[in-house]
Length: 273
Image (tube, rainbow, N blue to C red; front, side):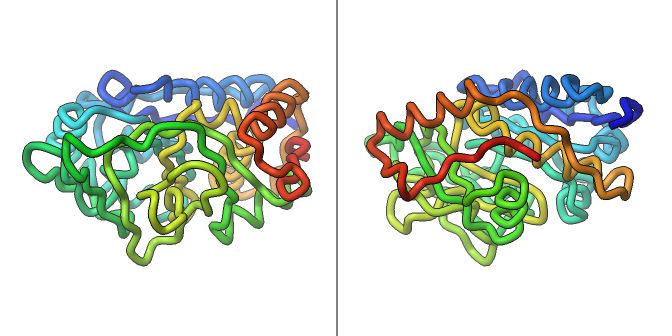
């Protein structure tokens, strides 16, 4: 594939929303694009960014944050910037949003203490912290991807039903409205520990409580983001060359075994093709 392709990654408030190593998602996309000889540019979508900066990116990545940081972000992400973000995601710009970021994309987040933080309303979901004395949702997480488009695309890329492994650490409980869930919990708690759902999926935007970070543990998802972004940007039927992901796949297999997830029911992706 010609190296003239360029990927512009929009990193959502990197100084305020990079809890639990979620910068690893940015690095994974960057490296996997560069290994294929694509040009990569990273744009910080922070308080100094403009609506035009948001409109210029091909992939958006958002990480986790504490309640105070989320409040600061939402004070800034209003007006024309919020509208630019909404237009990008509604028009299919791919992205991965972890923990605090999905809460910001929803209708609102109610912290354990303090005022409700209003969200962008892009995703039909709400998040509520039950209170400071409530046990957090912490631990390893395995989900089966059930979001129709994403599940189909990943199965086409990998040749098998897609499962994701990650790590969750959140106090808020998320309830979905009409937005599609990202997946079904196989191991862990997911959105709320009650209904078996994890994350949400809107157009090409992945929302999840899965840290880890998510993409190093599931590199085929990073490839899906890159491929989707390139197809949208260049309007061509682009397919990515596979990379050597044997170590990543071995790490996934080791985690499934450690968690005693039945591998006969959880086929392993073999990498993008």
